[in-house]
Length: 144
Length: 146
Picture 1 (cartoon, rainbow over the protein chains, first blue to last red):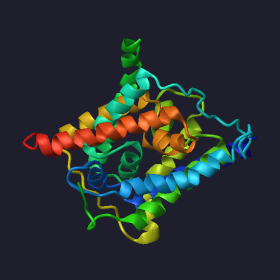
Picture 2: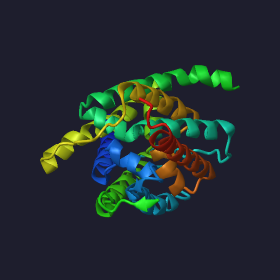
Picture 3: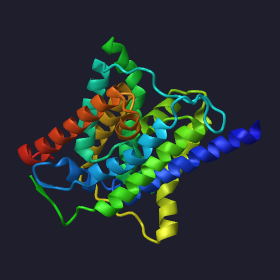
């Protein structure tokens, strides 16, 4: 039982590490590169589109092959979001996120990778992001 | 619109993308989880019972620049264009927005699109559209702003 828990945690650590290395290799851990993608009207850098295409090219068959399975290889039930409806809160949240992304060129993954490197601007951004996440339950009540 | 061929990096972009996709495939097959970064962090802040798993995942992300440095011998040299005030505002917006949206670039943009989820397609179109519009506004319409 205990050994299984350790294996699950090691696996999650490995996933985070591979994900972070992928962000670094792809160039997405550089806000200037992300903003180069988001700046359509300037000299456009389409690299980020290829990052997503490469990621989906691997993830799509992996998710498709999962169909019919109920348990993951280490025994946990497979948690996939069940809701499929597009809701106002989903669109509102995504728009707010997109504005923040466009302001700094940072989304949560690259921000954490750069904070891990100890870079002050990323640490500041992550601190503010955590504050935003902690504010969410209060703001959520206003939305109802 | 013109493509900036000087900075366009199709090789590394595709290679990094394949690694990200492999990480997402690994997480769902081995742990049964969606590799969504805002969800992993947000769930930790909400004190979900699986904190140790979330911490292990986030520790892997934080360790990535150090492992990258050990393997390649090079350090990261990112360019942060934003002022401190802008970083704080952007961080709060990203934190609030991704919780309302139940996902970010990883959970919706990679895993959700790979699952062919209509919700994730709507989310991805919305945050990309807002990102394009924000950069257009600040880089081209309000250049005098701090």
